[in-house]
Amino acid sequence: MSDIRLSLAEIVGEDYVSDREEETYFYARDPGLMPAHKPDYVIVPKTTEEIQKIVRLANKEKIPIVPMGAGMALTGLIIPLKGGIVMDMKRMNKILEVNEKARYVIVEGGTSHGVLKSYLEKNYPRLRHSIPDAPATATIAANVMIHGQGRLTQQYGFNSDMVTGLELVLPSGEICKIGSCSISKEWFSKGAPLPDLSGLFLGWFGATGIITKVAIKLYPRKRMRDVEIFVTDREDLIPDIIYEITHTEMVEDINIFAQPLPMIFKDNHHITIFLTGDTDEELEFKRKMIWYALDGFIKSKDGGFMSVPPVMKPTLLDMPQQSVSRFADVKKGGGFEYSGPIILVERYPECSRKVMELASKYDLSYSAMARIIGRGHCMMFGFAFTFNRADPDMMDRTRKALQEVSDYALSAGGVFWKPTVNEQRMALERMDPNTRNLMKMIKNNLDPNGIMNPGNWEVN
Ligand SMILES: Cc1cc2nc3c(=O)[nH]c(=O)nc-3n(C[C@H](O)[C@H](O)[C@H](O)COP(=O)(O)OP(=O)(O)OC[C@H]3O[C@@H](n4cnc5c(N)ncnc54)[C@H](O)[C@@H]3O)c2cc1C
Image (tube, rainbow, N blue to C red; front, side, top):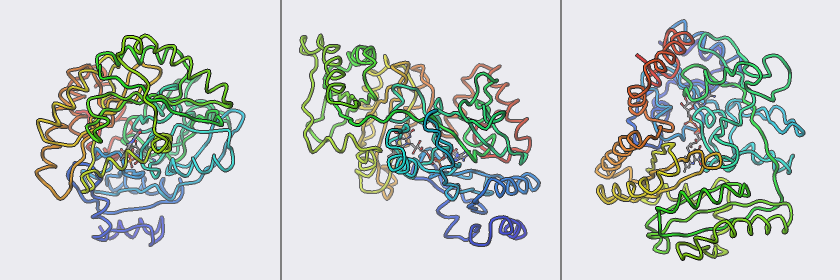
């Protein structure tokens, strides 16, 4: 095995490969609840060519490879279940090109959302991208790989819908371009009008290839952003309220949160509505349209706008929202995990009841948060629990609650988002057999030696 370490060191240099205990300890786990498993090696490549050489070596020696961004998906997707190499992408963090007029950016496969955000603010203040509320170190490639969602998801769909091109290293070691960039030097489309091959990679958790470059759409950045909060204690009305707001086509993003603390939030559902505009008039117009759309609920006294305290505004308008990370440490033990099935908005009332029922059954701190996707086609409903890592009993209760969420999500017609390995198995069992066979054909053809993030999307 030390021959392997030597060969890896020849590719990336001694400083960027390790099999030391203190390194493999960290790369064996993520902040969630999945059990740790150590890699044999950790490697931090700098170029596509280095990745190509590593993959070729791994393929020849049949050693697993797990690509890793910031390791923040929380559901164990970067835990090397069968050992092998964890490939930390953080040195591949360059912004390669911005096409201002066509509004897209090409970045390397380890570039973080934070780096892109700062770069755009400094160099292209009229452009922005869809930022998730994950810690700013979360990477763009990994986020589209797991079909993440960000601030522009309400308008434009999943962040992966915003991809306009990919470069990958395939499990065989070939470098492959996907989309318009396979024919042209322009990266404006990941598929149309060609066959859309991005589906062979996006959503596969690195089990079919490693993204070395990704292009994503950029959008106009307006001069002003503001937030309104509509509050109701009638969870049954939420789907109708969302329907009315999305009908206006006036809002940037819609999140709904319900949580027991602080007391001011208890028993209410808070629909946070984000607005943007280049002028006061534009913002005011949009605000009026939303007020008008919700007038019926106000008149029937089923809900109303809450005046957002000035101290709360910066927190809400922050991108990413730090409050999400703060909630993650409510129990002061650094433990946080959420199951976020993608599900119809009409299921909001029962999802909301479910999270409260589970919190009470397992005596846990919870937060329910929903993000509307694509003007209400569906939503991500986050069943979020925070726990203290030093308290095994609390961790066990959280695990049980999340298992119940998985069972519930499937029964309610939802589809798991960033599923754990166990949830992937549940999804495959439930899947139409012909679809499952198609997945098997794709996986077996692209990765016949099963070296890429093994354990994930393993179709038998
Ligand atoms: C407090 C908090 C808030 C969050 N809020 C959001 C949110 O609002 N929206 C959201 O979408 N998510 C959110 N998340 C979840 C998650 O952090 C993000 O989705 C994040 O973008 C994942 O990126 P990562 O770099 O951490 O991925 P990782 O966990 O490192 O990787 C995720 C998957 O992608 C694969 N992968 C990584 N890099 C590559 C590559 N280059 N090529 C191929 N495969 C690769 C990995 O093998 C793994 O399967 C949140 C998490 C936390 C902790």
